[in-house]
Image (cartoon, rainbow, N blue to C red; front, top):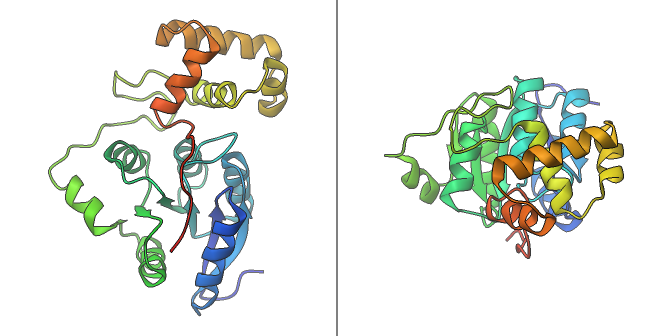
Length: 228
């Protein structure tokens, strides 16, 4: 049950130890309440639709649906909910895409407990929050426009939202039948999406699609996920 005057938060991270650490940090704050925990990007979207929290703390490296695509879907479905990215990555490309997709803030995982709590309060007020080193990188940089319907305005980004979902599941080793069941579509539709991906990217095997997904940050490998 939501408590009056508290900022409601959903934690989205596939590592239990990280979620427990964040929850323990936030339980010390009298004005913040964790109302749910998601272990996949898809679960984060569904949970946000149901619980409508004030803030979602989102990792990028999420199974089934990566955190950036989950952010886009959340902002489209529940625009009043603010998304605060908390990632092991400080790469400029991740930061830029998160901002373009509507994230209200981006913090790295060595952020202090005090700064995290303050960031939650700030994004809840409608402000944007980026850790100081990240902010400096963004000062003189123009952000790429991305169509929230899933068709990026940047011509260099050519995949629809559904194609990104299919690509992630392919890269995670799912067969067409498993992808169809996960997304609630037919195997034939999955095969069609796979064909479009190969055509658009000029990549013609699963290994190549997997490499592309890793290079573009759609999935991640061997990323340290710790909170200090």
